[in-house]
Image (cartoon, rainbow, N blue to C red; front, top):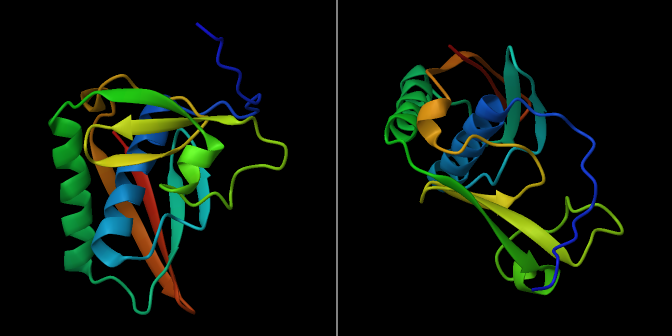
Length: 152
């Protein structure tokens, strides 16, 4: 079997928070058609994601998204990798964030049936390892919805 060779990854993510980001991104893209966050800052203590939206999310919508993420966490679904070529990936994913000179083989991370995306980061093995997810604040300004979240 041929050895899979990927590009080096220079970030050290906190796996539970990084996997929670996948769940939030996947649901925001599905629910609001806004795509994945265009800007992200994912850290152990708190994280934030920015989305282009035509109007601010209501408190009810924010609580609904939070409840969805927690239901996916509580479902304790597996997180697994798939390795495909860039050519295969072009049919399924936005390739614009792939770095220049990326290897021909890319990694797709699946979080149960909730999310799949190209990713080089670290993740938990099952969503129950994430813990409680909480959106702690939200701000909307000039077409950008920011969601700040914590685990605990």
